[in-house]
Length: 104
View 1 (cartoon, rainbow, N blue to C red):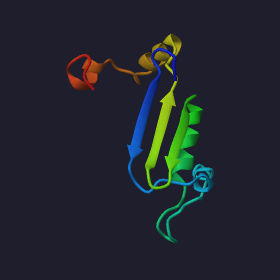
View 2: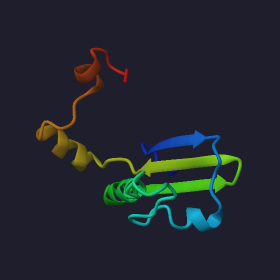
View 3: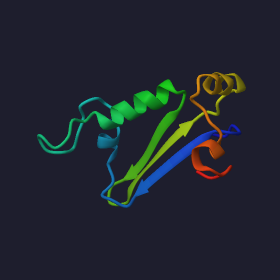
View 4: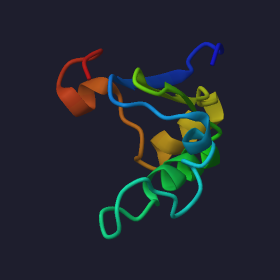
């Protein structure tokens, strides 16, 4: 996201990666490449739904034998949203959480 204040989390691995056929299905509920009893296939579907409900996106790039990169991006909060969160006691300045402004 290019808007000021946007937040992106990028996670990359150097594992086996995915081909396009697998990548096209990873956000479908109950899709898994794991064996029977090894996973529910709900993790990525749940992540995508929560992120989308927050106005964000989940992007994935992957190549077989080269690894995978997930980028989770959230838009910046509006001033009205911040005021609402603060009044509800849900948003606190960094010094309230960590004892020093700007950390954490």
